[in-house]
Amino acid sequence: MLQNQLLLLFIFLVLSGFFSGIETALMSLNRIKVKSLLKQKKKGSKILAKLKENPHKLIITILIGNNVVNIAAASLATVVFSQIFDSAVIGISTGIMTILILIFGEITPKTIAASNAEAIALSTAPIIYSLSIILSPLVWLLEKFSRGVNKLIGVSGEEKLSEEELATVVTMGRKEGILEKEAAEMMHNVIKFGETTAKEIMTPEVEMVKIDGNKKISEVLDFIVKTPYSRYPVYDKNESEIIGIIDIDDVLKQVRLRKLSTKVKRIVKPILFVPETKEIDDLLTELEGKDVPMAIVVDEYGDIEGIITVEDILEEIVGDIFDKSKVKQLKFAKDQDSVLIDAKTPLGEINRALGLKINGEKSNTIGGYISDKLGKIPQQGEKIKLRKVTLEVRKATNKKIKKIRITRN
Image (cartoon, rainbow, N blue to C red; front, side, top):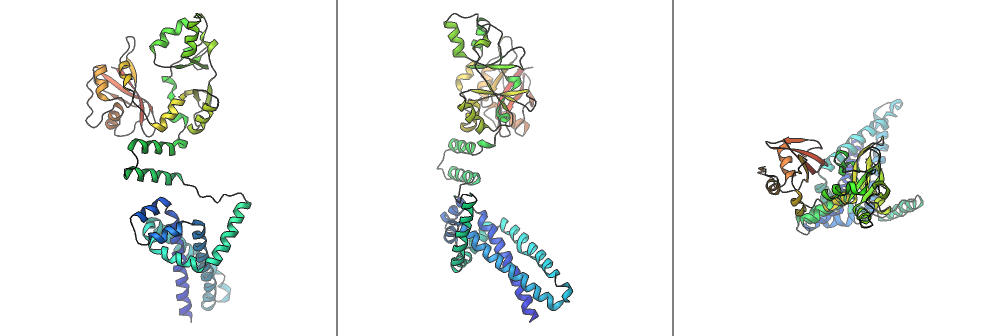
């Protein structure tokens, strides 16, 4: 009699592990993976797909099975312990069974299932499907009850595609030739868009081109003509005191009206100040809502960290697009020994424009050349010294180099 009870207790413990492992295996496979298994015509994939059509019903079925065997195991353990030990120590049966269920009914099977989710899910799907049919009246009742509770507490039962699933869809589309490389990269950028902060993509303060607001229009015209920007941050008493921005169109308007003596600060437009931790999806919405083309990024103390434009943010989605027309501007100015360039500028163009002989065996762009030389994605400020010039990373994220300064030695 006791031997039969011990055998039954062992079976309950195995079943507890079975249900726990199945729960992990089935719930870890997303819909995209299931569709992939269907496409490969894997054995058990059709039944698995049916189960995944209603994950709410699936989890209820598994939980019913798991809880029934756990309760049965705990009850039987009490009976077994009462026959083996004195009644004074029967109470420890609950504690011992809790430990056994935790180790052999939860932790171990879930760890194994997490590493072999696909194989376990395919092989056990028919068993769970059959069980869901047998338990269908009870499953239906509990499903209605749980959905009712969800509605009462305001939890939506609508299933949404996770970021991981979206990324998987894009990756599979690229591998199967449905999506072009550029389109896939753009979609991945959109998925990761909300994780990027202003500090990661801003132009650092040392690279900001600012204009003194106390100067007259006539005094800044030559400077504006020589620099390739359409908007400039304007400062008042010192460069850390940004008071707004000026637009080239507003400057030209003053020129047409022959108001060259007007001070720059009289035609500035408001500028937005944002914390360096602000996520760029929220920032883009704010910039568009306030119709402001750029924002000053500040740290926790209010000190200027850099500047970020709508173009910078959109570039995170569409990627860096190298403009060949900029090659014509690629040269050292007479009074300067350095030039700031896009990291995607081809090495050949740089060599021709600046009279250099940078040889990138594995790379076509200056950014790729630097990454290859350093053996990593460098951080802002890292340098490579060559015979004639020094290459300095001036703007970079954790994924790529964006801007590089080339300085004569």
